[in-house]
Image (cartoon, rainbow, N blue to C red):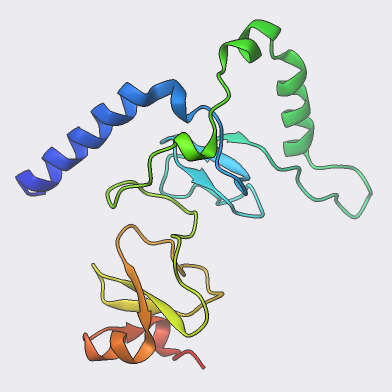
Length: 166
């Protein structure tokens, strides 16, 4: 790892520590928080924070099983909610979504990056692979940008698993 990346990593870590409690409220659409303090919008808890140290807290209720009983994850979440003390709840300040800083390129997140839309692909700038709208990694890699498929090809990027959008 070069010195520039290390310095950027230290700056992000110090910045996150300084902000600390201002990030207490999850972004809209989040289904869980990973152990590295990033958020996920995955529909299932399983694998939601892969590469992020695992799930720290799960907000969404798991789907019911065929027997009609809710999953153990939902039961556990309900138990955790019941055991939370009023003091702990009161100590968490309510942050407005507008008060949160925008994610940096060094922060990892499974939330889609804003932008994109019809006719745009997400180009992972570190691997030069582009992802089509609606696919798993569209807008979700550490580094990347939205552009048309033609622009991506012109810059030397290739389709994820060789599957062009269309």
